[in-house]
Image (cartoon, one colour):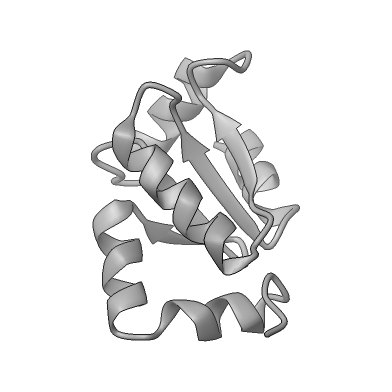
Length: 102
């Protein structure tokens, strides 16, 4: 859990993903289309990916990918991110943490 906290606090936007997950691809594309440069951890490719996935599950993330942290704070999965986007709250969050300048 400590490793996870360190990972999410080092960059403004962190996405935990799997290459095999279509929703992960959708969320990554959303942020990239905004011009955000998120730090992306592909849990099916990195060392200790299973361990990190278990830590995300302990935080209540279900499913465990995609999971987005903004400014070190857990935002949630695809549903939460899309809800923020649709109610126009996502862009202001990204601006507050310096991930988006426009």
